[in-house]
Image (tube, rainbow, N blue to C red; front, side, top):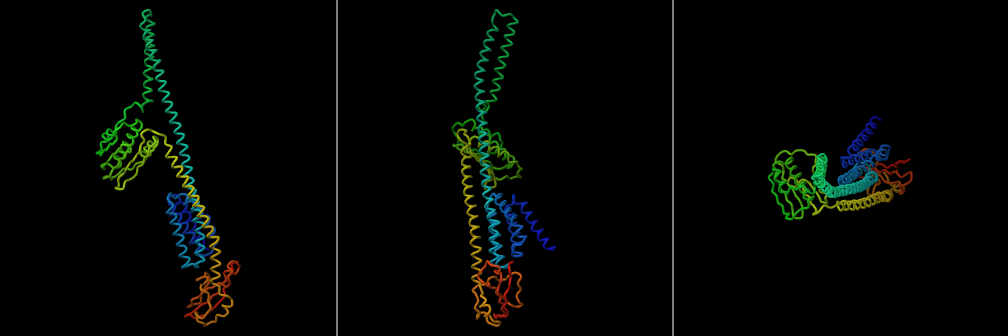
Length: 463
């Protein structure tokens, strides 16, 4: 009883560990859960309360492993290895083909099918994420359009109001020079002219801020490289003028990439290339000194900036141990609709494929169990029947070759049955019906030196 309690506790601990790591290490967690369930079944080779109780936990674990696995291959390998290991152990040590079939069915129903549904659930979640991203993009596009329109209206108001203020200043200035005015009136006109002039100047200052992106000069890529202080091999193949917003994006990407080189790869060789069609590439070799640890927020900001103008951005380690930043920019800023649209279509196609795979896997597993298990049971019973007449004709002392025996045995080593010492026993079906209450009964024939030394009818009722 104590051993059984410790065994149950061990199973529970292993499953608890598997659930704890299923999010970060889905393949390891799935392998642990499958191995635990298979061992639990092979200990008794029957579906007792422990095996049945662990079945829902294994199904849930398989679903979560499929749901959290970014790459399905490791978890698929875990399922395959568990299946192979269980079948091999069943065939060689624990009951033979019957047990192997049960292991195969259990792994299929409790492992493969929930895992396939988990993969489908992950694809569905990815589509939902793309939908929210698209909604956020639309909101941001609306905000950008609203802000741009406000800036445009502010510019128009500046032109109109500034003109009126200038006109008012001229009129007040002319009034100030009117000879018929008294000294007090002339001072009031002077104060009014100064106020109007100050208002026009403040309005101009505000518009300077609002129109900063359009009016402020943009540093060229040569100036950005020179300011970095690095030894950079620069190749600028762009000969024509660049749109102001695109030029600022080139400036931002180049400056941030060179700053990252200074922080993370000081002393590394740096190459900056800008092609005629606005493809920017900044590469650096391996760092000769210890690299700093960064947050990665700079690269995230660059990716967002490039995407906002309708470009494409990538940053990743290079094959030689260095790092490469690449950005492809359009000639003019454009809304980022095409990449999101393409990603949504690609994700939808992946979901359809995942749904088809899930249905196919589930159908194959269920059909295999529904057809294969009864079919195998019939085949196993029919091809291993030693009829009562054949059993009665077998006499003690007869040579094995002289006996009329079936071409295959029902089971090699049935659990709970002991053979006489020094003998080798064969176990055969008693009748061809594998579905009645006597389906577990066996004929036992034991041999020593190829001669029959004992025979026995083993009544092993199932209920």
